[in-house]
Image (cartoon, rainbow, N blue to C red; front, top):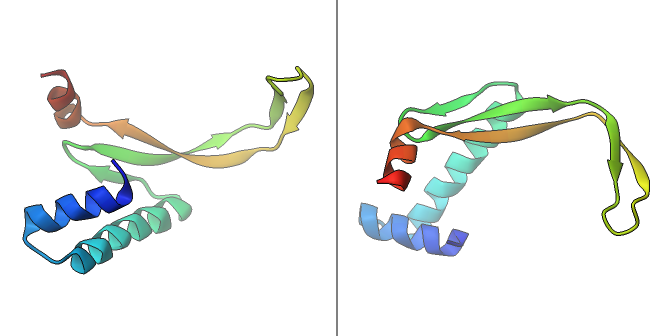
Length: 91
C-alpha cells in the first residue's frame, strides 16, 4: 500500500476529506520522528512500538565485490509488532 492509498483509506474510514487525512497522517509520522529523535519510544498498545537502537561501528562487505567497507556507528528505528497486530496477521 502506498502513502496515497493509505490516505484514501483513512479518508473513507473516518469520513473526512483526503486533505484532512493527509494532514493527520503527516502529523502522526512527524510525531513519531520527533519522539524517536529525542530518544523516546512510541508505543501503540495492540498495534506495536517504535524504538531506537544504537548500531556499533563495524565492517560491512559490498555484496557485489566482497570489498570490506567501514561502517560508522549510528542510530536507527525499529518497529516491533504488538499482540493485536500479530493476532490479526495469524488469524
